[in-house]
Length: 315
Image 1 (tube, helix red, strand yellow):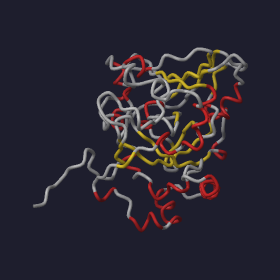
Image 2 (cartoon, rainbow, N blue to C red; image 1 turned 60 degrees about the vertical axis):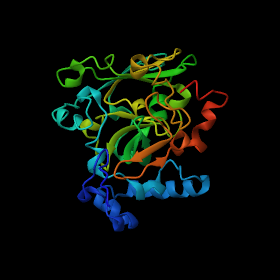
Image 3 (cartoon, rainbow, N blue to C red; image 1 turned 180 degrees about the horizontal axis):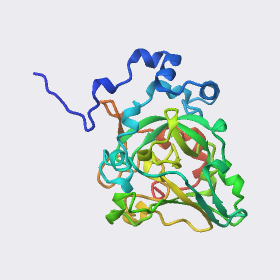
């Protein structure tokens, strides 16, 4: 007897990237709309770095190109509560969201507090392409080709003072444009934070695009955070303020449920969410579940950041 099992997020066969395309690097990049000199160079460098560093965790992420999640799923299956709590809410609800002009206010323990634009930090010709794994606390995962610039470039430009130990990020709070803000799901605006050394790590990334295109509204346009070794809620979207401080920031999900969402949010399969296991995950587009990797597979690069820290208490 055959038993049909419907996945939690069924993917039509028409949306799954063909195996032959996966195997052909140039055809894949062309079909994905991201073929270019910049990306090709980044992937080549990343592949070489991965071969030298081992464990398939190079910054460029070339070794992950055969695992990319289909673009349709990356841009339609989203957590962005400012536009609704359903995974399919953000795309239609953010359709008319205005992202130009856009400024980022920098304040706190920093030598150059000011109001900046994204262009103040990087020009389009200097954007980097990276492929990163992503792991949601809800036990689903993706592999996404992002475009953006290292968070360290931003931080170096504004020059934090010697007293600064943390960076706090605040998302836009505009109920007229963001219908989810009309409901007290979280304490608005959405706030996230990092230790300064985490934010300065080479893997920490500000994103302005995906799949070689300008970042869609539902994915956090025009500027969002990506921290690939942390759970997805750490990646604040539509950032409007960055504050440097000597105190650990109060973050949105930690305020809402401190027993479920810790400040660090490092991917750790040994620490379960109170309502489900974190030891396994399901890649969007797959039926099978796979074992969750410590630090989402980026341990060889980031584990040293947490030397001596109890990662079961500091979750």
